[in-house]
Image 1 (cartoon, rainbow over the protein chains, first blue to last red):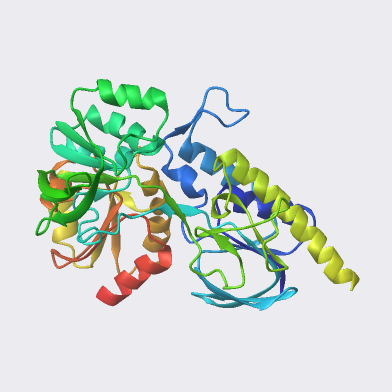
Image 2: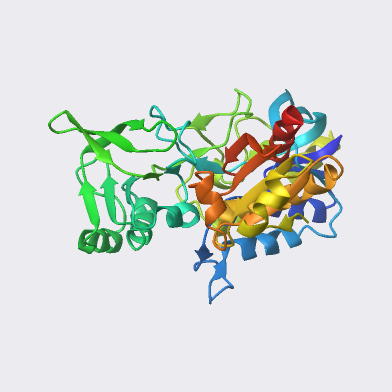
Length: 305
Length: 105
């Protein structure tokens, strides 16, 4: 029986695990990919305090992970599939058997929301992408589409516009949501063609993406755009498949109080998986420390009973 | 650590290999590739006697990725007797990679 099971090895999970171990708790940490979470898919961070010159995402991820070296904790690459039991006696169902823990800290983060249209899953890696920095180069001199209207969609469109021949920027509203500075740059870029009040209906292509069908929401008409690539940036969704039903959520994200306590005693949540305004590395790390402190107090009260 | 491979050695080392071969197509600027790379190294160790594992930098080697229609990385392709038997794009847990290999070996 572990004092705490920490689920997820991004900034929140790493910080929570570090604080818990340092307060003398026995900890098991689950991360099925390499430590670092979404920092690994970030090109560079310019707003992390203490790094005034900026830092590459993977470099910061390595530094976070190195912070666990030498600490006494159990690390698992198996996936957590479910949580049963109650305060003081949780049982985690994992891809590698059952694990018992007195408390649970959920730091499973968020991932890119898919569009949910026909052909998206089949053509992933065959023209459909969720990472412009990773895959942009495969579309050098070719036409592509970007879906989304927030900051990341606009940023990625600006990045891609330097590589591709033509870029359709598709957004369901009649104006973009992202910061004004990005909107201005997008509109000034000659090879970006805004396609507003429009949704992507269907993707076509036998083995590779060849075209997409777009619906104009104002006229309710369909048209096909010939593109080799489709980059999707329509927001994030929390990774909560394994979270038990009793844990209250809001739009798919876990509700906590300011001490990271969920609606289930003994279960805490930290980082991007939480319902909150600001999803940054610095706030995830802060959440992790708070959750660890709250879990530690919970365990002390449990022991006093 | 899995060895790096280039376009010119691909036919000889991958397609003509006696053992099945897993190739991780990656690039230094690709974050999700960094999430998968260390897992591929572990796979390489654990399957040492049954599987060969290579990594190909798509920046330096454009021919092979083009031949296999790769338009996103990381992409893992499992080859057996010169044929593609499994292909996956995007980061995935080690357990999942192992499952795909086990099913094909």
